[in-house]
Length: 403
Image (cartoon, rainbow, N blue to C red; front, side, top):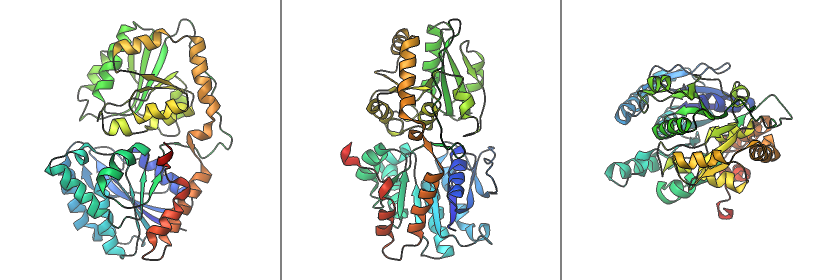
């Protein structure tokens, strides 16, 4: 059985829980260690008790750097008694530093997998700070055996032209982890009755002020014909007035956090559309990502709404699904929904259903394949580990030349 030490930047992030569950389903033994983010509690994971390395805060880079430095100094004590892993996965740049320290403690022949699913804006700056941070990533990642990322645009716009990393790349999309149903189907369209409004779901990590303001103004302009349902974890560092703001909205409601993937069918079943737009790092990470909510919405029959010029728009446009706004404005949204009726909605939802649920889900066989790829890396003899990793990742590697 493959033994994996998974190093997490935020133990409360539901995506960490999903990844650990996927690795366990693939028959890996997982030790989880990472940082607590503020007062957030760690996401519950079946049979895994997380080892806390310290506490970090949102939007406080220097504080996080200090916490990482302290964690590295104390790692020998923190990981005392942990069985030597066969492979280490480092989620995000700060955990790559911890991974290098862990390798020094356990032995220098443990391969590291770098999992990077967001490109922080600091890495993209052209000043001394940005160059220094990229140099740190390049140095820390010089011996990485595999880079896991979730969108081709990250490779096209950052990893190939800027990062300097030489590791083979695996595309691991933000699909819905679905382990029970062997024959899943996308639900049928569910148009509202004549007396009900259309509903747009904005679910997940809630950090985008521009989306919040735009959806507020749009829902007011529609005077109740469209309602916005909001669920997830607000980032109060970005949306300090979120709670009071939502209390004042006549056509928006905040329904709180939810379990992922357990509650997805229920929450997406309440809406017809999925807000698959993010302006948090507009023109950079937000333009390049393929968000969880797009896969979740499509899996459960919610029609995605994207903004032109983004990887999300390119993705859904290539599959002829969803709606793409040409500009982020109330007028554009009003125009879109003025043209949506029962037939156009059913047609759009049916095109998503025709894609099949497997397009949007990560299943037991996918978990087994992932762990098999990682096992090939762990078992690769030095110094050929990268070549073996490249072979192991071949079936999941991005074919960028075909794009």
